[in-house]
Length: 59
Image (cartoon, rainbow, N blue to C red; front, side, top):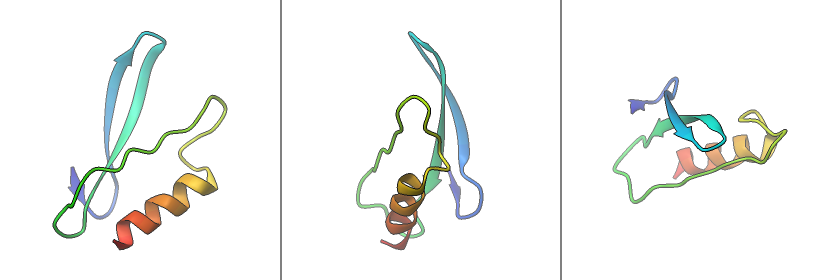
């Protein structure tokens, strides 16, 4: 994972086709892992995912 800046992109094969994962590194020591997802028709630019990503980055 990259620290700060752009997330690392990882492609994972699923029964429904490839899924793209964006890995954001913790700014400091990580206390755990947070996994966020979206449903069909959503996207990583969705407001709720952006807000939760920002909150997680702030600790």
